[in-house]
Length: 315
Length: 126
Image (cartoon, rainbow over all chains, first blue to last red; front, top):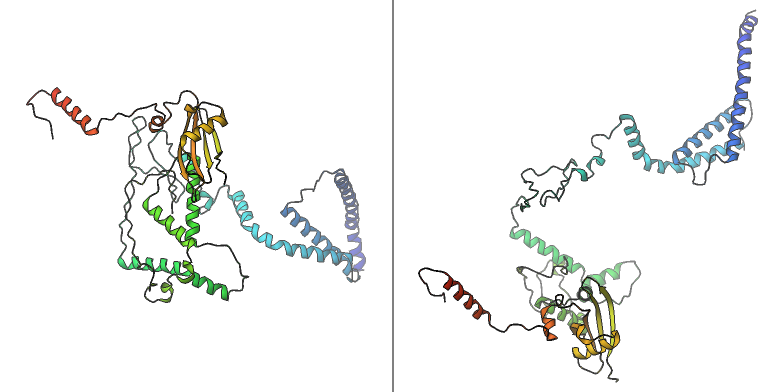
C-alpha cells in the first residue's frame, strides 16, 4: 500500500532526526547549566542596570518564547485561560509600550551611529561638521590682532588681505564692511511708539487691571518704585566697586540728578496721585498731569572719552 | 548720646608686592561732625601698633544722615614713597609741589630754544 511505502521511506530520516534531537538537547542542557553556573557565580553584574537596547532585546526574545509556548499549548488543545505565559505576555507588552517614547527620543542618535558605522564618516549636512576648529585659528603671538570668526562651513579662512607681520608688530586695523545707516523718520517714530507701549504696559494702572482679572493669587510685596530699586542697585554696585578697588569715583551731573530723583520719589506720596502715561496703548495724544514737567525728547549726545574703565556697566 | 568714635575695619588685604596693607574703614561718630584724618590715624596706630607716619588714609565720605563715614587706608612698611600718589605724600609733608606757574616755565623753555637757534634772531612768540 502507498501508506506503508511512505512510512518505510520516512523511517530512516525519522531515526536520524530523532538522534539529532537527542544530541541537540544534550548540548542545550550543557549550555544552560554552564550559564546558570555563571550567573550564580556573579559573572553578569546588574547593579548598574542593563543598557536600554539590551533590555529591549531581552524583552522581545522573552515575548517570542512565551508566544511560541502558548501556540504549542493551544495547538495541543489546551485553553489559554489564566495561563501563566499569557500573563507574562501581557506584562512584557505593557513594558514595551512604555519604552516606546524613550525609543523615539533615542532614534536620532541610533540612526546616526548606524549610518556612521556603515559609511565610516559623517554625512554631508551633519551639523557636527560646524564645530569650531581651534587648530585652524591663527595664533595671536605670531600675527597681530587677527580674530578668526567661524564661517558657515566651519573652516576658518584667514581674511586674506591682512598681512602677517611677526616681529615688527605693525598695527593693522580690522577691515569691517561699513553699512549704510538708513533709519527714516517713520522708523524712529515706530521705535518710540513701541518703547512707549512697553513703558505703559508696566505702569501701575495696567498692572492693577491685570491683578484684578487674573486668577493668580494676590501677592503683597514690599516693592518700591522701579526707578528707586534700579538706582539703589546701581548705588550698591558703585559702593562695592569703590571698596574693592580702593578708589573714589566721581559722580556726573546726570547721576546726581538721578539719585536725587530717586530719593525724592521714595519720600513723597507722588505715586498716589500721579499716574504714568498710557496713551501709547489707548492711541490718544500724550496728555500731561498739571504738576508734571512737559515731555522732553532726549537727544543722545555722547561725551567724548568716557572713562571709568572698569566700572561702566553696559545697559 | 555718647560721643565716642568707633572704628571698624573690613576687606583687609595684604599686598606684599607693594609692601602695603589695605582695608576699608568705617568710622562711627554719632553726635559729632566728620572726624579729622589725624584723629583717625592716631586710633589706627593704637589698633595696629605702628607709627602714624606709615599710615595713609583717604577718601572719607559721610553716609546719609551722618554718624558714619567710610574711607580707605593704606598702611605701609618702609619703602612707601614710590607707591603712594604725590598728593597723599604732600599731606604728610613728604613731598612739595613746585609753585612756579606753568606759563612762566613754558616761557623759560621758549627763551632757551630761541637762544640756541642761530640765525635771523626772531623774537619770541607772544
